[in-house]
Length: 95
Image (cartoon, rainbow, N blue to C red):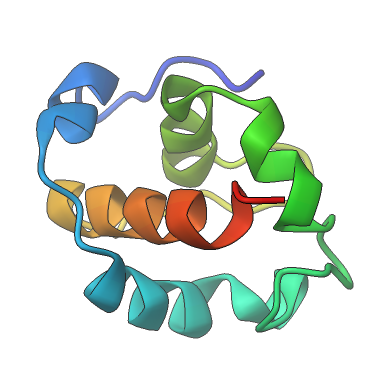
C-alpha cells in the first residue's frame, strides 16, 4: 500500500463529487497507456478485478503517490483524482 499522499488529504478528495465523464478522459489520457482502454492490463495490471479489491482511500493514494513501476500522478488536481476514481468505480467495479 502506498504511503499517505504528501500533497493533500485523501479524505478531502473522496468527499468531492466525482464525475465519471471527465474521469474517462483522465483515464484515457493518463492510465490507458499501461492498463489499456478496457482496463485489461498490459504494462500495468488488469483493473477489471483489481479496482474492486481495494477501498477508495487506497486507490486515491495509489493515483497520487504511485507505487513500484506506476508513476505518481501528483499533477492531477483533487477534482481530477475524484473524477478518475468515479470512472474507475463505475467501469471496473461491476465485475
